[in-house]
Amino acid sequence: MERTLSIVKPDGVKKNLIGEVIRRFEQKGLRVAGLRLIRLSREEARNFYIVHKDRPFYDSLTTFMSEGPIVVMALEGDNAIATVRETMGATNYKDAAPGTIRADFATDIERNVVHGSDSVKSADYEIPYFFSSLDLK
Image 1 (spheres, rainbow, N blue to C red):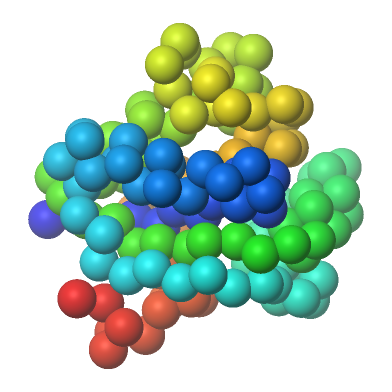
Image 2 (image 1 turned 30 degrees about the horizontal axis):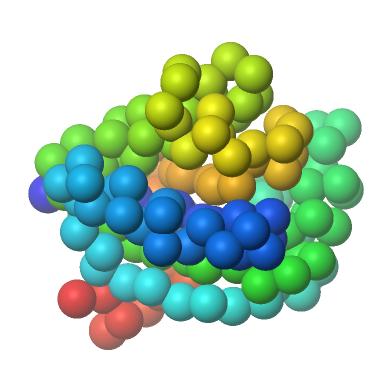
């Protein structure tokens, strides 16, 4: 059983896509092990995305991620990381396969509705950023 983290970003929350995102993950056989609606401060967003601190999009991404509420969820299942990545679609929504979350709902490369851990190492950092072991069921 593998665990991963996914986030419904501020644009997805604003578009009322929380239930749709969860539905798509559950239809792929994933189980929600933890779920929270929160609002990140700019500093919290900067710390979460610290891996991208030297990238040109770091400031705009962290500003965007702190502009409104987000939904963080820990998901689990067989090959959870790959399943979430496939369900979300390519980061650039223009490259995302038809029927993926990003192909269906994203408006640009940053406002692409969802985030998902890209590796076991990322998931091991990202899940405890939002959830303690007591939070996960």
